[in-house]
Image 1 (cartoon, rainbow, N blue to C red):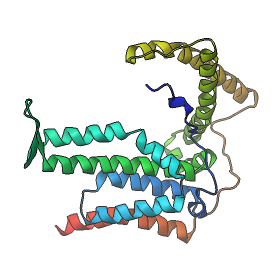
Image 2: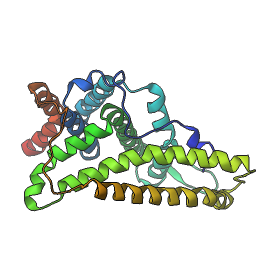
Image 3: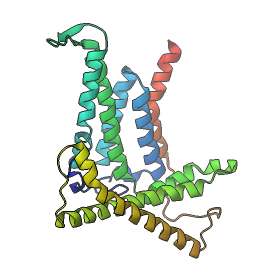
Image 4: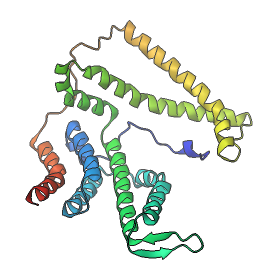
Length: 273
């Protein structure tokens, strides 16, 4: 665990109109569905012609979202170790044409293993880039309203969609607050001579004085929020309207259709044989 991890100014559920100017022309529901649809297709679609189309759509989605390059780079740097480990594991555990043998231990690196590892690393990288772009394109309030509308059919099955959306919204709003409190607590501990030490075990023990008050503050905030909802007469079963939700347009349908076109192409290829 790096001691400077919390120095990164990364707040979830925030957005900037300058970063998502083109995607902001779409309805929040369309943005959410397009982003999630691309992520699902990254996991499902095999490496063929449909994946080439998917890669093109991912690039267009990121360009339209215009996220800061620093955010994209930070997202990739955070999982570099996972990408390298994935490639190495596949390279030395997949059978095939031997490319290189490690002296002494005799581990064999195969071409097929490198290909599989690179493919999986590319999928993980695409998921991270899409997640960063989507989080900057859809604000927390827009995401809550979009989920509330998209999940509204489940209310007929007596599923508390409103309560679920409220929980998601409170979670997104709690993260920046907890982040700021963690920074404040760490600065206070450093002012008192706090030393995280070296080694994994030493660092975990040193971070305990930070996590305990952070957890206590989180529980206190949750209790205060619950009391506030009760005092204001919040009813999770009440029918609510929302202000600012844009209407679904033809452009939204076209964007969603383009997003799902790689999946349609893949299914067509399977059915044709």
